[in-house]
Length: 238
Image (cartoon, rainbow, N blue to C red; front, top):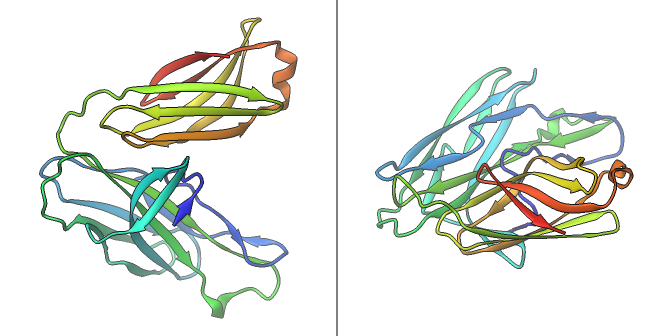
């Protein structure tokens, strides 16, 4: 299973017809799950915020990265229980996330929980769009309580109205990239990504291409790009 960019807890809307959209109703918490040493279980909640019953499916995938893409493959090392849930309006359902694999954790393990709202065919609108909600929640299983600080190399280039970012994670822990901005010669800056950009898994590389806001050209020559990695700013000259 390939996802070119999987953003933790991002709702992906899929239009099934042309017309006025009817939004999905599920909400999940937390947006990231971490299992530390000696901890094999966590709890995620799914809430039906709509006015009609819904069904939700929870699947767990092993998460890797190759060729600048997230790769998801089925796994039995971590399971979700229950994997299916029917929620009445405003009801909240707890889902247990369990690492059932009893082997020792030699290195950080990375997974994704995919939570899908299953459309009810009997309630499909005659006019409009049924929207299926999908959430992708990262799960990290840590081999030790305190992981070493990450080490990432970061490069950036601008071509036309696109900013391309390359990151290589040389550490044993995942790196979270966020808050990307272009700095200009005149001392101003242009926010490009206001929140999460994505993750770079241990020993992996990722490339992201993002559009540059139209107002950036009026601010002068771009001189460098600044991004946050695990909450710490890293700057690279253009």
